[in-house]
Image: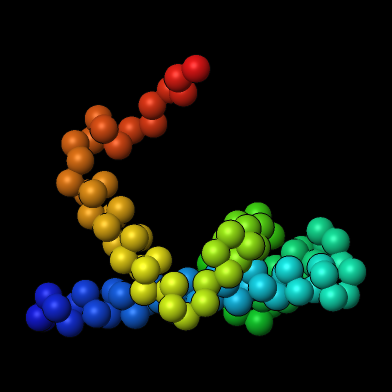
Length: 110
């Protein structure tokens, strides 16, 4: 397989995942703002998503909260999408190139 085509496939998958996270985050924020829902909307959405997509992992309420935070932090308009994918890809490449000791969790300095 051509490495360039494989990278394009990975970029496409990353874009789709970012869009999914952003859409879920936006749905949570909109429901909380427009309909006055509180924290319970995340649990209800999680239950709905898991019922609708039983084979898909990562749709627990615990995982939806970071999607909400992601949407609030980035909003992810289309023009930022390629930048986010590039940053994500660069960070992954750096991490893969580092020795194992550098990637382990370091104690906080203070």
